[in-house]
Image 1: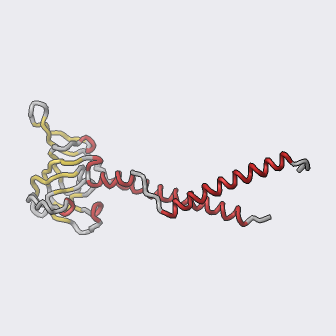
Image 2: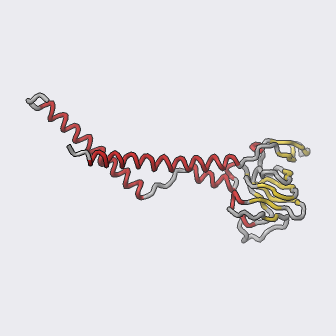
Image 3: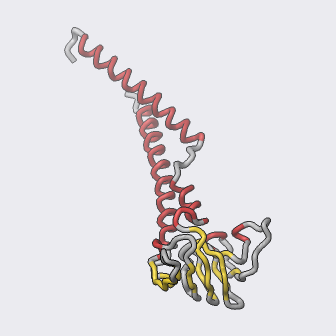
Length: 198
């Protein structure tokens, strides 16, 4: 009997399944890494109530909304995308989670030129990054999925584009499955209709 063809087909099916599993595992790992960037401690913040009165609060980072004023110190994980209103001289942040740059980046309150990209703007700080040095008073301008990292996470969550190889393997598997079903059905029918007992 020829065992070569079934073995090759089995290997192709197993390899396709492993390839898909590996891609999904990578996406899940990336999502888990992004979720770990969420600040865990409560954030001191100020917001106004419905009567315009100032409320001094300590909020869970997930409860922040655009317009909240937050206070950050060295060692704090930045809980949302923020614009810096005031900061101490020499304030620095670690943007390696966002840009891959290992060098600390200075921050200030000066408004950047309109042509400056958000990641290059020194008056912004981003969710998931860390204050390395100094203190700052900031206003929240984006939270959750609207943050810079949140948009990256959404891109990871959205359906991954399959490669040409994956499409070809899937197509090949479908053809083989149809051929196997047809051959099996014909073989069964031939055996049932055959006058010779098998």
